[in-house]
Image (cartoon, rainbow, N blue to C red; front, side):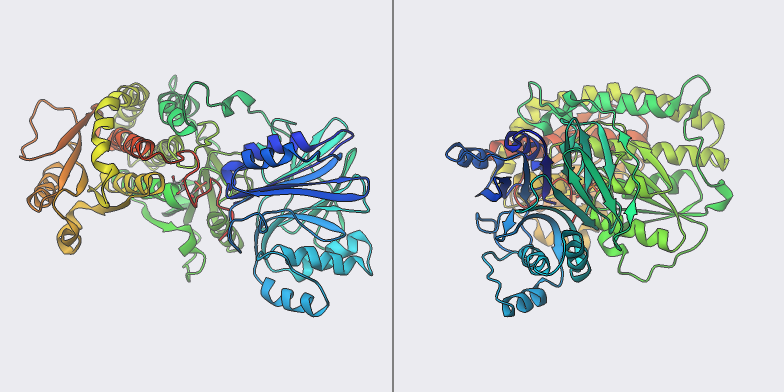
Length: 606
Ligand code: F6R
């Protein structure tokens, strides 16, 4: 959360910083700011709200300078307003910060006693005053080292100094930070995405490291101030993927892209010639693994839950799922024969990263399923399975969810076939079905007009429920999450069979309830559960797949039929109408679809 950019150059940097901040807005968008150094003075412009506001504020102010830092904020300490927006400055330094300083209250008391005046409610401001204090008696490097030793918590920092004309300091602990190399200029960014429009040459800081950037030179140091050599990596991804094209929103584009992203992913992993799945360099023998733990947050957690059903159905492995924020504080039973799989679109989610880190410290086998292959989670796990779906910019995860499920399904097939728990014929049948998936997702995307009409009933709803059993249960959770985060409607995802144990009490006359009942082995049971909610006045939207057999139930309010495919792949198809339902309901309510309130794309705080 929060985005950081810094540029030191031989030319003015304001407009490049603004461009990068626009790219970083997916990380936080409740306030923004920029500071530059010009003629020995630090000047800053800050605002509440988006980068657009910042740009308007800049019209009346000619912010000059060849060195600068910028920030987009997702508030943790202090309300989102202009005063709390970053950068925060003293007479000597200006700082942008991503993360949380856990001992800020104590440090603040100490600094106030020493005569420092605080202007904001943020934890960040203690860093400003700490460095200012240390600079009184120490050189720059020692001041940084001392400051880093005093602060606890997670952070990525960008710092400029009044008396250092072409210099930016970057430092990280917990939160990611990247350095980019350009012609006669160098960059600092909270991820490589912000830097990609300027360079494809990137280095990443490891935890505890700091760096000193000058326009023609970058140095890296460890937490004790010893110099560190860094590899420069070349990134491949091209700029045009980040464009909305003719779509109104990134989310809409990303939903519509799913047939292509699925096709790409299948092509990457499925070896058609040999009837196999290209996961050859798996670092462990299958007899070294007898259980799997899948870990993720939010949508990524839902794909973990989906994978549990597949692994249990197709292999004899013990499979458990864990919400990453719960994982790290429990007393986990780490066992040598367990494979830990971390699922994350961004690869930067703090809770998921912390869970990975804990597993590594306990000597566990770690594998990640990520979209951003340069991310911290990808870099630090032993084995990486990319989902190949290209940048996902809309805050609500859509194509990445399908991509995560697809890769986990492929991994399940591969492991099941190596362990000889999936016979050759079944394996080949399943691979064949996968080759149909992209086309069927495409056909399912055409339920547009029907969904738009259905949305009218959701816009006025105070609450709603999403019900499913078996393979459809994780999708019910995902459908509810999408409606909550985009349309701000309370939505509860629930196992349909559990309704009678309490939640049936919530059903009121006219309450919209989405029932996921594809014609799989749970179908008849789910239809019975559906009748129970209809009997209590619910307005049921049934999502099932096409069939010659009529649905045997009366009083269904609306029905959407997706295409047909094997039972285990139906979850991909029934997800599509749910994504559209959330999208169009939010659109009708006039909400900001790509940047819903109180959220951010990359959650790098605990
Ligand atoms: C929901 C959503 C979030 C993320 C979660 C994990 O649409 O986007 O719930 O899924 O924050 O993010 P990643 O996958 O980046 O670890």
